[in-house]
Image 1 (spheres, rainbow, N blue to C red):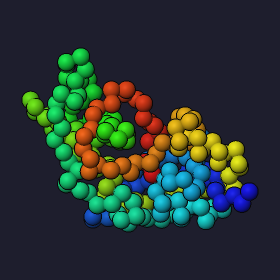
Image 2: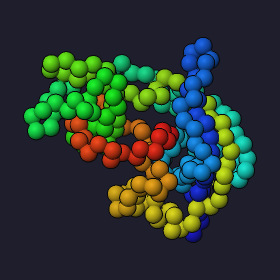
Image 3: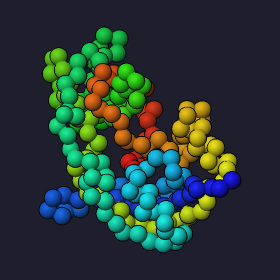
Image 4: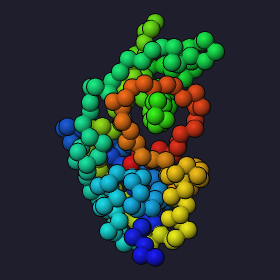
Length: 204
């Protein structure tokens, strides 16, 4: 088989950059739990993958992705008012998980899962920000390659099964890290299975 997929293992720090150039550490991947993925499946930011996959094992990197190559501009249209009743369990509002500043799992009518941040709560509505948390920010990645090699046929087959829903991605390399979803269709509902998301913190 002509294997074009790479098995890549990296350790890095991710910084979000403000307009004045100030950097904020958003994520730190430690040596004892590196981030690994298989290239060519769209499970990471395309620009991140293109830069990383050309580097060899033990090589260091320090590069910045502009907004358009990261998570795009912050869109006010992705701040929406959702009916309060969406967030009820047994006719009671879910105060435990739905509060200002909370990040909660949502799902639209097509079954796409994504995250929203609670901005405000009124008697009838919950205002949600569906923008990616890093939207509008250039992203700086610093780190090194732990391993970069051709992926095996077995690893590629397993990744295909994960992406098709035939296998679980939990603990298998943080595969559920594609944060891009279509927020234009806002027929969303609250996913009450709290904690079912990736939980890995890797947001590319």
